[in-house]
Length: 307
Image 1 (cartoon, one colour):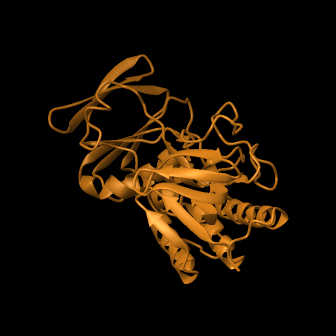
Image 2: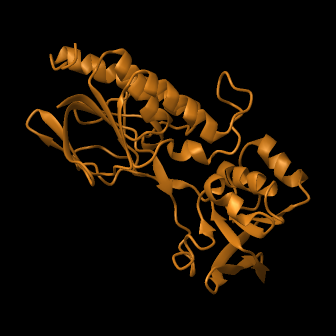
């Protein structure tokens, strides 16, 4: 039995872990990976205290901080379900079976949204990718396509701009979205070719990706590429939650200003919640708030294990 089990080890989960440890709570962090979507960010320019740092480096600093408090961390362990059993939570995992806790903080983040075009499933891992930071170096000196028109797509295009021979940025919108600074950097690059009002219709190849088909305005085009990076957003990772947990129309966990969910003792933070802005610094702050709320709940209910 733990005071708290934290599901997820992105900025929200790691921050929650530090704050729970500072409150002397018996804390266990369970996550499929460390860092979540933060590790996908090529350049982070808006995290307080760092003028410029990569997402991977920032997550390493987070993890080092957590290690200072000797918090139990189960990496590579996926949560399959969460339920209430009497007055305790039971977290079921694929590796370690059931974990019991008085409180739970859900910081499970989001998962990439699929494009659902012919060839996407066939060539996933063979040219189709969802993380330019993870897979970009595999396409050094090659032509690649990035699908999407928001910040994640612009970040991917700018990162690949330093690696690939040419980058095709394909957006269904008439104009690129995202932050103005990224928008201007993309348009200033002579290696990035932008196709707005365009729709990717198929991914083709043999063993690996070789080309994509798209409709650009009223014109059908085929572009030779070795890689396709799908950057069209993500979906909250909340499929393991019980029906008692209130979700909004986007599938995000509904929380109040103190990170409380509709289930007493269950808290949530970060991109899996209905907090409007999905930013690393906001997720970290939300994780801290969730931890403090969980501590207050434990004290109010006389459930603290650790001394």
